[in-house]
Length: 79
Image 1: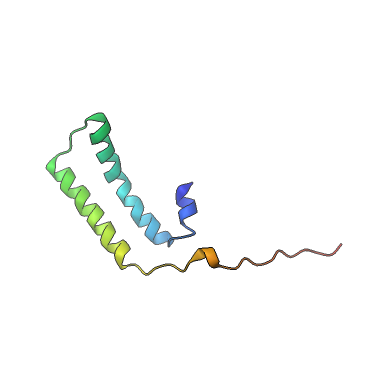
Image 2: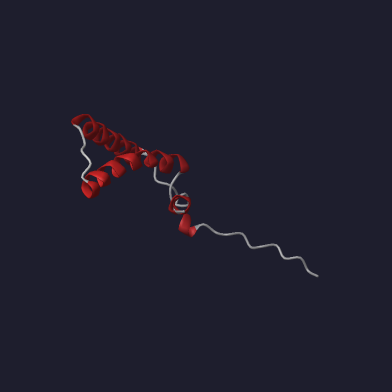
């Protein structure tokens, strides 16, 4: 539900790219809460993934501010 809400404020391609970070955060949460072990390759891959996402997000153009868009008036038929 939060992703659908965010599409109003971010480009769809950008928000879908950011979804690639979910497994990294899930692994970090499993390490912190459940004591799961992370190997050096997993840590390096997670850092590389988050770094790549950060670079793309930083270079993407800012979306227009959707909060100030005008909403067309509904068409009401005279009865």
